[in-house]
Every structure is written in structure tokens, then in C-alpha cells.
Image (cartoon, rainbow, N blue to C red; front, side, top):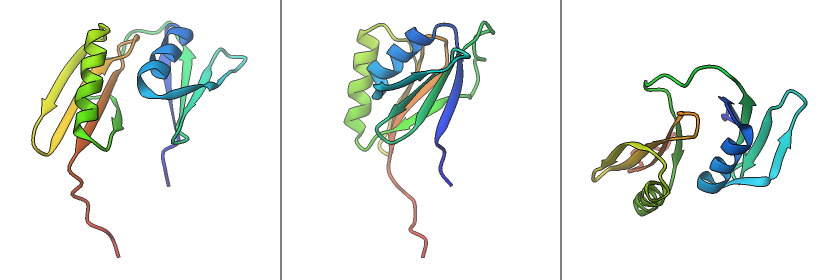
Length: 125
């Protein structure tokens, strides 16, 4: 079983779409808007992000977050620097021998983590 999509309530679907296209490699050519106002966009891994218009309150300041794993710690560091230079709020940062990560906020305050970690998984079989 594999996780294939995530739905997020957002205040402005176009603004959120641009954020995820710009920083997290979602393909704008795949963006489809549905009659209820939801826009779904896909990344190159086939993961769908559903952005649904909402007037609800901001996300809680808790553990809830979305994570993007990258294959190289320098990719994490480089993206963090680009986001900070663009004024995107970075709310956590960690740079250790076996884990390099940061969390930033999307336009609606959702926490987005980008991370690399040493793969300690043991093959099954």
C-alpha cells in the first residue's frame, strides 16, 4: 500500500498552487480544477496534492506536517537557503551527522518538512 494524495484546506488555491509548483516540484501542467473549487496537482513521483478552498482557521502549531525526503543532505541545505532568501518562514532546522532537515510554512501556515537521513532500514527477506 502506498500513500498517493494529501488534501489541504487553503485560503487561496492559486497562491498555494504557485507555492508548491515553485518550491516542491509539482507540475503545473497536471493541475486540474474541479467544480467545488478544489485544485489537484501531481508531482513527478505521482503524488497528488489536493488544494481545497476554505475559510477555516490556520493550522495548529503542533506536530502535524508534510514531509519530502531528498537523497542528499546538500539538497536540503540549498533549498532551505533559497526559501529563506525568498522570505518563506523556516520554523525549525536540524543539521546532524545522520539527519539534515528543516520545516517551513506554506502560505496557509501548514508545516512542510524537507529532510535527508541515513537509511538505517534493514532489507526484509
